[in-house]
Length: 278
Length: 263
Image (cartoon, rainbow over all chains, first blue to last red; front, side, top):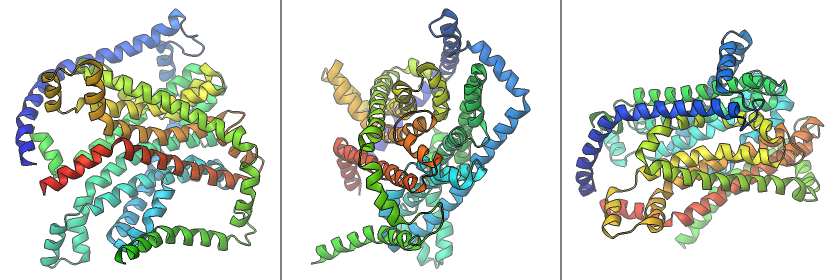
């Protein structure tokens, strides 16, 4: 173990230096890549490889994007999607953390619930769509049911891993110092599990967005997904692509936000400290 | 004796909660008058009528074949492109922002987009599944190929391992833990896409049948569909885990040896 770290350290340093030198070039290449991508999207329909009725040139999609910005219906739809996503994610995270801590810290519960979790987790949450439609209709509650079911397992499983990862020596030390159950939970288990919790939140945030949009698209709950379906069936192709781009941007924003949150809440954690030092 | 007791204990632990939950479901709905919640006994007795006759071949099989086809294409494309992008640093820098953006698009919104190109036939559904499964596999492969051990790279160079042998025994082998992780994530996205592409527009398939039951208010039949989807999801995850065990046996062994050795 020690020998690998001493071997790896200089290698990492030299690679970090190279990365520093390359970073400017990389950013430039990335911009070039994006520009090429956009140019391709402009050229392919213009040359006639694909009918512009199916894939309008990117400039026309840009115009549609600008139109969206002036359309109050779009902003309401965006708000609906974000609300369904955020509410569902919040409920799933709260449930996942509480249930995960309770199950994770009581060995008997963990032993007896493992098989049930393994069975329920892979059930695709879209299986619940017909039930959601029957019971809740196109309500926000339909979206929440799907989002919470999908996101909950991501959080729960990570929390269970995290709680299990507690160092027994640290646990015993805390006990020797006379910390009660609550104190050990607060000062030993929670900091150990926090990185796992945040990984769970990051995974759940992405899944929650997918399910929120799915619910809107398939069930017809108000939101971006529903707008995309309407635009497609109404033949507003450029608008449909513009909306798809918006959902992509939303996805990027969710990823960036989750990473920020992780970095901010874990600034004390060795894995991040090392990253900053290198 | 103690071995026997341990086995009994773990079996009881594994079966107790599911048994209690099922029993609760059975008892609590036994004389349920609720429209949405038919008795479990009734759901189970309709199950064979609904699924085990001709629907198995007419709806379940086409769905699974589309999933399998889309998933395999995504694995080939993802690993192929991933190895290429992962081993060329400049190409990686060139593609990264575009890939990050494409990955962030929630795959279900591609259903209406691909419907324009491919209609509502099998091609559309397979394409939707490919477009959703591809990203986790591709990006994980890129990460895995990037992180190939430098010492092994040098060793291969010294021993003159080149070409196909290098690709297979060094690059793909070292990236395989990440590739399999990507496949696992891709499969669960694939199941979601299989179902919703059929719910959105289809004339057969699991998702289509279930939504049809819901639209005609055949609630008991709809519940059997939900159960079937749940069981399928579980079985596919189980298959994936068996595959992982088999392919990554060396990796789990290596990790255990490293942990055991370092202590």
